[in-house]
Length: 568
Image (tube, rainbow, N blue to C red):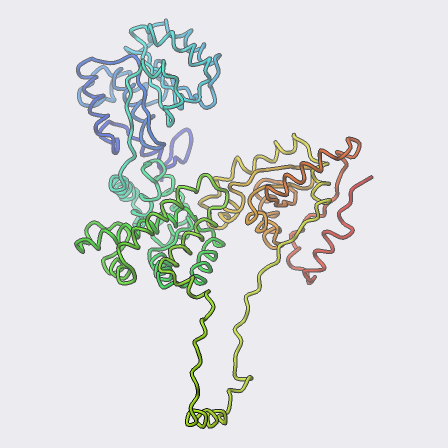
């Protein structure tokens, strides 16, 4: 177990933070350059470490700060001199860290500037590490600029950022810039397996590969995902657990879905996709996985080499190639790529993914042909012999109707259509303070992205906006599909209990789309001032609501009959 004397249990990414330059993963060029600068004593007064999250920017900054103050530095810091020991204990007076995300004002920077002229207390250099430097305000940047222009010889600034474009050009021009790249899946996989072996935890290599792929180039992300898996099963890491915890679909399921697509089984494809979505599947991840499958199939189609395949086996790649052509696979890749690019701009990505898969399924025009009316062929004159045969045929018994079995029609849960006056009464009673308090839902929504039993609420609310809030109800605005999903009875009850249990919010949630939002805003503006801010009473769903024997009609009558009142 990983324990720290002061803090108790320590998470993986902190336990295995690089303690030496040789332990830094994936940034060999940067490490080599910094080591040469220390050896040649060619140290700049300001550095900018830019790159994606979890790629080692802050870790390298700390190692560099320790190294330039080490009294016996050779290839690595000695870890025995007084400067190294002070750093290891977290008490070095000359290595100062500042998080610009929460300390971004001009007063915070002035405190630093006031201390800059004073000589170091223990080491050779006074090092200021400012994380997320792009969050500094413009006045703060300008205040720092003068110090960067004429810095004392004993002061070094190291800026770390995930968004260098937001750093003002005059600051950028005074820094040595190092671009940290995403770490390869191979290196993340190798490091993760080393950690699992040190921890004495058995693992499936496929599970580690999946975590490395999900990390998208961030070592810290990979270890955070691993930590979550080990919280579920501390003794073993399996692919099945990874797929269950993070709502992933297996390669087998994805190949099966791809097979249905190219067999033009549109209804089956959409049905399976929606079932996956209901179970908390990450729609963007599925789209990316399908794109990787297409890529693997195209690679295998060239020379039949399976050594370059990432997601498929040779047999699975051949199975796909037997269904379609490389030309259609290239079109599939373009469609999927275009769809994935829309994920950030659109509130309900599921709709775009469904349309993409329908387009892929109908590549050869089969869907259009199914929907075309059958053409009648011209009737030829019937000869006497043919007439006789037809008469004989008419004497044959027809199939009995009772032998024909009708397929059951799947019952779709109805969407509750809320009365406009009812929604307006919530809006009239809403206020800004309550809305700000309830914004906690959206601030913490990402926490549930990878929780298998609560991911569906993340999928349900992500991309919507909190439109209005009063003491009893919340109105959220999204597209029509999202609003309809929120307004189905079972989902509404589940959402109420989720907000109550996770956030302590005892309110009902109602969904509207943009058209309804505009309508409500207009009605609100047209309402006289003396009718606003009147209390509304809404009965909450009790925990036993779903256990009652009431019919759907009874429940709707209970909720929207005499139990929703606006005081005059």
